[in-house]
Image (cartoon, rainbow, N blue to C red; front, side):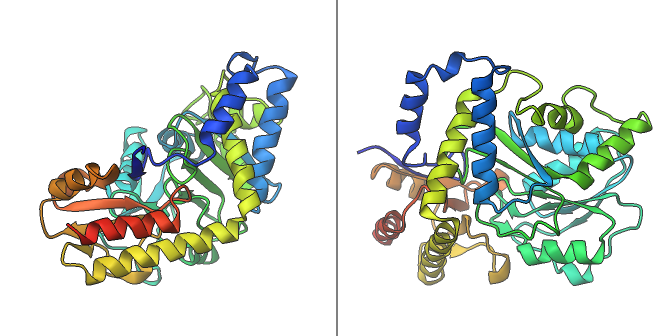
Length: 358
């Protein structure tokens, strides 16, 4: 029996990954030119499968990078002249904010403690802020920003761009695409792939902002910025040699998810999250870290432990089950349990059964 990974990324591989990788290797995809018709067809198939899976309008482009971390940098450098606004409530949302400072911008932030979300109605965003940066699912703390809160920001600040880090939740959130401008994610989490590919979704308003900065001579990243990605994307290509194998694999997994149905995936994710949180609320071993149920992530469940987290993790390893540890200085006091589509309801029930015996 192989190991079962409940880690929040890299995570358990989607069940069909092996089959698709074998097919890709037999098709010599690792050696094809990224300027040829075969790759252009592959690029088109992957982007169209993602577009259908996410119900994405055609005024949004889909672009590929090496990671979502790279998109933090590119999104700010390509689209912010001076000031961005950041919701910070964990290690990754904080890094997005810190990237803005490192780029020489003057970002604003509103910050909540680890484990807490935001009351959107009580937050005023300065007029000078050009872009509002939201972390939809904070992987370090298991806090989500509900999609309706993100939509409410666009309703209130319609002239500002809304950028969404959905690294550890896509394709679970159901976005109203008229109320977000840019969304990005990595494939090693909810898409169940090995790490090495970031996906950036951006609309025409986002591109217009990048072109505005370019016209002022203020584009802070002339090498492979949003505009170069978009220019090559029109030709179904990338600016530089991409991870062809993973673009192919992502397209195939998106196709598999389409066959299952994204709404079925979302319902199953909710069911598994309810099982995990209900167990944590009744358990003598774990308790939910996030107290406000509305702000609890449905894809990364974070729990405080009533015994050393390392002991729980080691005990489960003997059962070939791998949990994620807490993040940063909470490593010894918490576990993080990924609830991605690659994990079935039966596997979650089995995990709970094992935890009951510890």
